[in-house]
Length: 412
Image (cartoon, rainbow, N blue to C red; front, side, top):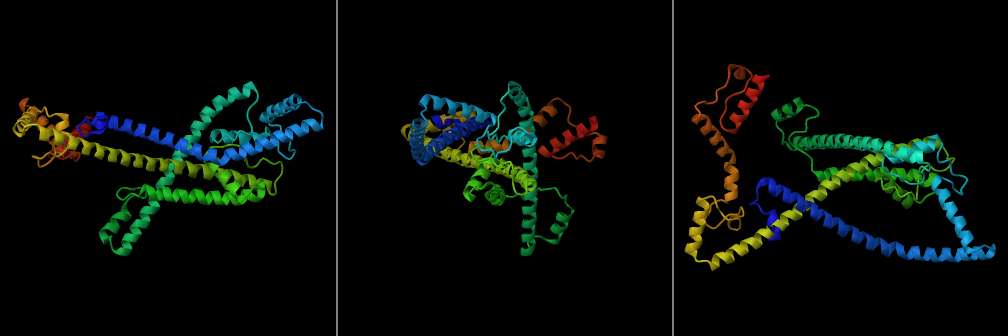
């Protein structure tokens, strides 16, 4: 009974609403399972190292307090004060550049509007915190809009290139005739009607682009920041995906070799990496949605099989004559029971009731409109201006559409 919300016999709007709810609930369950699995894996990987590091630190803390005749409370108070100063931007490493000079502030606002938020710099004053609320509200919204526009143009370029390659392959195979080549040459450049690339190819291209940008950026970060190549790749993913842990942050030293060129390269790699990763996340979300739809369809088919078995068992219990009479009465009176049709093909039907109603829905609407016009004695006529505008009368749904276009053109 719980699966009936996904059945085909529901009204279209109600069925779509229930399908959206089922998709939302299924995605929520999958995300919770994904979080539980990730928590279990990271706990198994990182918890032993955390426990070992904590034991070493406690031993070092005790030895230091005994060596310099400091009580544990005094030493702990000193360390807490340093933690508070660290949040403002004070570092023990004197080679670090200032946090709130113009270049440091520019780096900070870039991490804010891009939603990376490394956390190595945070406003300490009340005025700065209040200003950040309004500044980030507009900046993040504008940056997300920029990412969306970038995604649209990137997908358009990828689709156009893939379409050109597809047409070139067809020409090599002789699949395009001379007429089709002429039509393709006269088409608009930005027209992508007809053939469309698969979302999986687009996802593959974005994966390769993100990987290439990350590898090139890691090759730059490794010698400049003194990180290993794996650490550089880790930083690229954390930064480009706007996760922004803040354990590794680029361009924080006071001096670099070729400092201006390095900071320019860092900005370009950040911008390209965030745009490509944002686009990749959007495409992956489409693939996830398709997978969820596939799971829902499988659940629907399973539900329909269960209902079909239940219907057969019920039909075998009831006397055949009674069942046949009940079914005839239901069909004639448009009172077919939901459990007896379910949009499926029954034993005495050439097609299912759902398919029949869906195929005749437009024809019934046209018939009702024509009968209404005839009964009112005002058959629809087309004006001379409409004919001059190029709208033909037509028959059926095409005629109704042309008449509507003619009315609109005449009103103007």
